[in-house]
Image 1 (spheres, helix red, strand yellow):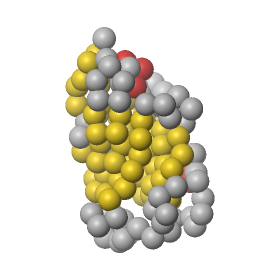
Image 2 (image 1 turned 90 degrees about the horizontal axis):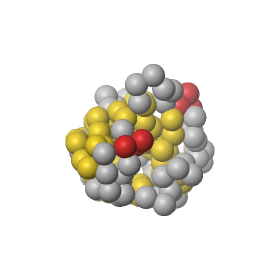
Image 3 (image 1 turned 30 degrees about the vertical axis):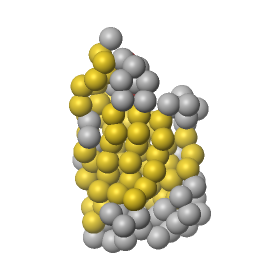
Length: 125
């Protein structure tokens, strides 16, 4: 059992920054892959960034890899998404998710087993 709780969303102007947090409880992360996804109204959920817990390998969607950084705090069982140079098209509900498949750098939502409740990010013009 894994519980994921996102926080850090809010309203920012274009060009601003936010840092999202995803705190995990119930189980420590060893072979997990943690991913950030986002979903805007009327659109499908899309992959944003991922990190393999053991070793900290990171990977990104092409649309954000020059602006966003995913990281982890092992002691706190927390994953972060630092978002810089935010754009209105980044507006969405952001979710963190856990994939228990070993060594899988997944980018598809249906590959992930556990999900947080989401946190709203709104970027104004």
